[in-house]
Length: 60
Image 1 (cartoon, rainbow, N blue to C red):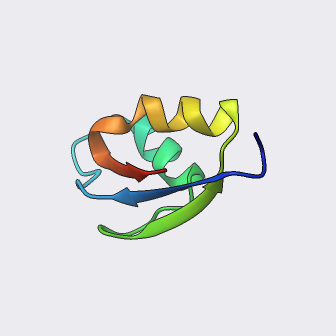
Image 2: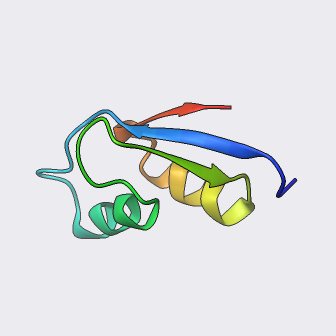
């Protein structure tokens, strides 16, 4: 499962969100709006994505 990747894009601003949600977005490697990152498909990454799913767009 670790050989697959997920592309995540930050589509909503982190302004006004909880501090731990901002930290999760940074942990995913996203900085500015519309920035993208290719991440390994692991349970830990999926949990981080699920936590801040309202800010992200994910592609398989």
